[in-house]
Length: 334
Image 1: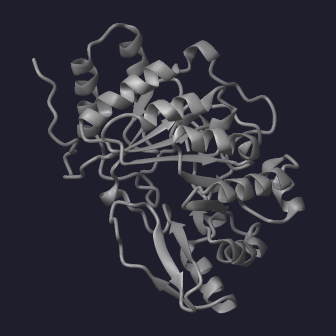
Image 2: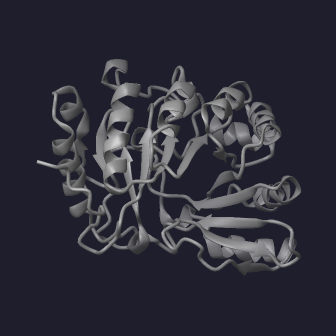
């Protein structure tokens, strides 16, 4: 029986073309809004999907219309021989966009092999340019390594390079303008991400969210007015703005104040082989069991279709019905 190759569409008419692949739940920093400082329990290494399993799943997903892949973690650069996987994914026919999200700590040493493997797009996590605040947030003294990695990636020709900053109220306000100016100076797009309820320590509450609207007001006052950029891709999660003086742009992932669920086109594969149709999903499907159990491609494709078909309308983060997922962010995949 041939594999059904019709679009991956859910009951709300959303066509899914974007797969985020976590390659590890391990990380070399300990950002307070993601991981505890000590006592983190990681998945045993033999429970993590192999490169061969990831590639096979990606090929099946591409046959169903997935054309965009993003490699995440944890911190993906701590996964040994990651450029080998990047080369395999880049070679899959039908992939139009391959990107990677990293904290940048190991980027200086791995940027060149990643570039040679075919990677061009990077998102680097950077909450602050202040060394003391970097240590406070990440519990590590690695700011210089991150900045060096970004510089190496730019020199090699990666582009676009986007810088992701989590917006936590009463903490990062002093960092907003310096980060935006840093982006303007070096040609990076800084993307401010509203603090979401995905931390491992239940520290989140809505009062700790620095809202996108407040950041827009601050940047417009301190640098130059911000002008919305019309959606080139309405399914993209970021609201994008350009500075009125013509120098640079910034983005906002406003999952709390301006949810984009109705345009969502993403699926997530966790490092331990679970398929999730939403970042905030409560339920997930066990792909690893099928990959290791000898299931044919058609059965795995059918599972992907069922997962998409069962996707809810949205996460309801602003209602009393919201339930935080049982996994923290580092375990789900960024």
